[in-house]
Length: 190
Image (tube, rainbow, N blue to C red; front, side, top):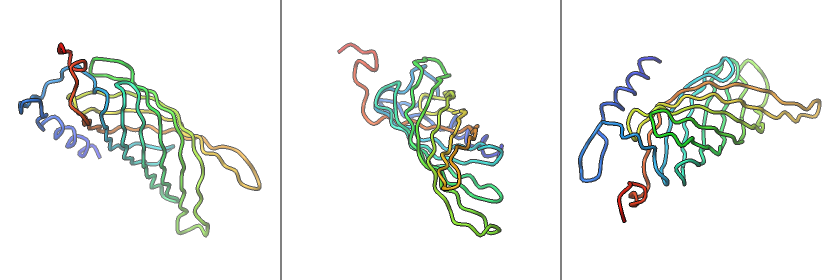
């Protein structure tokens, strides 16, 4: 696992960033991604004590507020879980390499029982809240570290309640601007 993380970091640092006018530069300008950008994150971590792998796509309509959709898989030894959820994410207006964020949202978890259990798969609602930080390697690549608390609603006939799980994860985020920057975003005079 560590080999893959180091490989991804090495590739991210070694790949040239495209700039206006065809120039390439690996430096960090200190500017956070502007409004109208996509973020794609591939990550891994733990949910409770089991591994968790996720893929997250985010759209940020403003420099500080966006929405993210996540698809995650929890391949534990007895049961497998597939999570998909959407979150609103607020980014702190930081201009340095660290950019903290807070996130909250909801979705569903689909649990598939293992072959040793004669049971049907179940789907439950979940609510999550969390936070973390991005550490920018370049203007368009960042490491993402986060902690998230999941509450899974259980509404069976025999009992009602909720289960709580903690997620700890890290990943690599790639940013892509959807439009050319306007003069107000680049600091140039109109």
